[in-house]
Length: 147
Image (cartoon, rainbow, N blue to C red; front, side):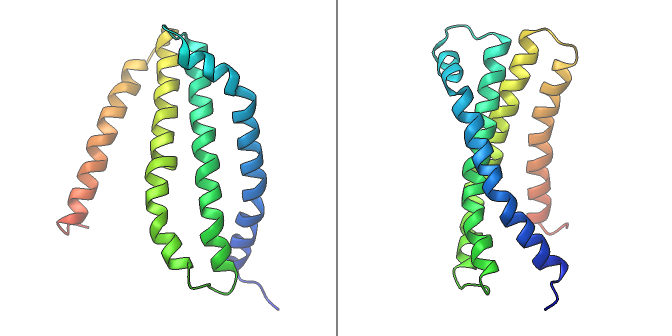
């Protein structure tokens, strides 16, 4: 039985999801005590902002990877009928756990850099604002049919 590239990629992705989740949970577990202290701190230093970014990024990755394990498993099992429903629902998980937690993690890391007065932080802040404008413009142009 020949396995095409798509099937092989699905097999590889599914097999990599379990260690990705386990390692992401491990990172959150290791850094959670320091993150709790950082959350409760009145004035966070660069290290605390960095730790919050690490925890936010890996927490988002954990939930995102766990969610997508289900639709891709359903796809792998002879295109199970729930696949389409799970994929359509996935956008909500992406908004919160992929994009939302990713943006939060980036914000924390930028705050960490700003706390150390690293150069080019202003550029990154401008890129953040600009990226929202580009994202909104992209969707607007697609909505009016320019793409």
